[in-house]
Length: 431
Image (tube, rainbow, N blue to C red; front, side):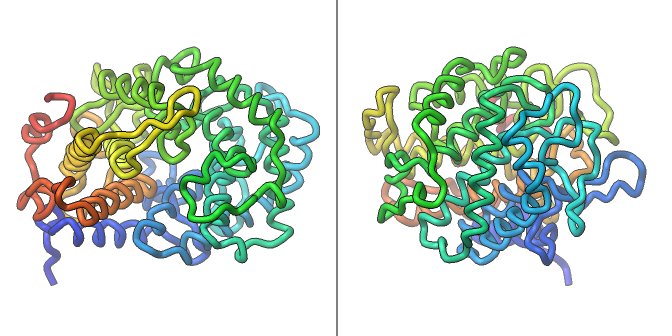
């Protein structure tokens, strides 16, 4: 039976198709391989393995389509992987390993999908944002009423993770892109977001209908929070000493919402001004990674469609919440006109994302190089971000139809796969 082309489907069906694509990368134990590429052709490293970060972000989409059971299963799997390395977590929380010379003493970021064995020590496993994301979302799930899914043993492990990330201080790591070691504001913000979720001072209470105190299970001290803010403030608005801005900094806006509105706007302005391209967002101005199996022409680094999805999410969250905060934690209310402008910008980036998804089935590639997608197509967490962005936009348009109006091309599809010239002409960076 012939399959209807992705671009000609209505938005609701495109989201379902995208979710079906994401399910192709989900394993029975609840994890997601980073992509379906097995490396059989020898062109690159196999990506059909587990990156813990990828699992956590890939499973995020389940919440937006109402599949909380799958989301919980993925976070229980992450707990099992952490338990496999519990001794390393405990040891490193007591005596800090040397990031420059000691391999095998950090929690691995990439593991085998069934044995959970570390696959290599040849690159930097010490990535603090993984732990921040896990603590943040696990706390979020508990506050949403899923605390019964977690045991005293689980809370003990989370306490040791808290000690692990704090014993490292807010210091150098390999960051979201496995490069470094260097201090990264995206890593500091992730850790701070995770700690703040468990810190019983109401920072994230606006998100929940009732207050659930997490500190009774895993206390977080004011000293940890103060150190986090001091360290993050020392780097911002830069991502690191070597990078004035980076795609990874969008995590400070979503999911963590850990920086004030002025800083959010500064981060978005830097990314939109310097990193947005027709096929995606380059990760940073000096990015050299293009994936094996692609040929890099002289000029721009690889373009990541993931970044277009992330921009859409950031802007739709502005429109959805209608409030933010300044540096003194005073509430800032957005007018309906501002919210509509944010929503419209979200739809523009979402449309740009869909133009570069594969026209037949709707895969989100990891990257484009010279206008061609790399072999990690689809990329699990990029596929998840498409679902999150699309469902968020659809929900807002349904909840407030007089204010948030879907463009016709999003409602009914573009009816054809866009040409390369159309992608370039309709790119947000060309407007």
